[in-house]
Length: 294
Image (cartoon, rainbow, N blue to C red; front, side, top):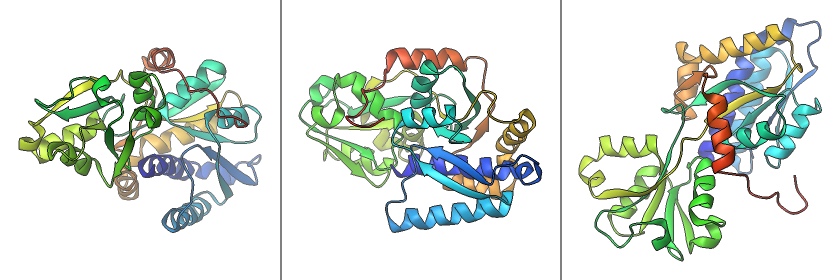
C-alpha cells in the first residue's frame, strides 16, 4: 500500500540523514543495508522514488546503500539477527510479533502519524442495515489505497478469517475521503479507516461525518518502528540515529518529508510501549506464514 511504503521510506530516509556519523566511523560498513517489508518499487513512480531515496542517502552519509524489501517480518527479523541488515523498518503489529520471538530486537524510535498508538474503525451509514461486522459478510467494503497495514490485522480478528475471503471485495479508493464518501452515498455498506483519517474527515465534512457511525473499533496498535538488533551497532551511532530522527520535524527538509510520507514526526519509545506490544501480540496474533515463504 502506498502509505505504508511511503511511511517506511520516510523512516529510512530520515534514519539515513541522521547517520552522517557513519561516514567518519573507522568501522563503517561499505554499504548501509536497510530492510523493510513496505518498499516495493514495482511501478515507475515507486522506482523513481527509490532511486531518489538512494541518492539522498549517499549524499547525506557518504555511503553506498541498499534498500532491501523483505518477504515479511519474519525474514526481516531473521536477517537483523544474523547481521545481514543494519536497520529494519517494521509496521507496528509486525514488530510486536517479531519482538515476542526475539527479545533482542530493540526499538530505536517510533514513526507517528497524528496518534502515537493508532486505532482502526469499521464505519457504516448511520441508521442503515449494518450494525456489526457480521452484517458485512459477502459484501463489499472500501478502504483507501493508502490504508495502513494494521487495519488488515484488525479485520482478521473481526472476521475470524482472511478479509479477502470474508468480504466479496475490498474496494480501494484513492484516499480516505473518497472511501467515506462512498459509504455516505450508499455505494458501499462500510469503510475501514484509522482514527486520524476519520477525525480529519469530521473536520473537513462535518455534515457528512454525522451520517456515519462506527460498527467496530480496534485496540490501540503500535506505530511504525525503527529497529535494530541488540549489540549489533555502536551505542554512539545509535544515539546519533535517534537524535536525527527526533529532530526531523525541526528542519524544513524534515517537515517536507514528514508531510510527503504522511507522518507527523518521530518520538522516543515511551514507558508503556512494551505493554502495548504484548497486548497487540495477544489480541492480534500473526497470520500463519505463507507456504514456502518466511
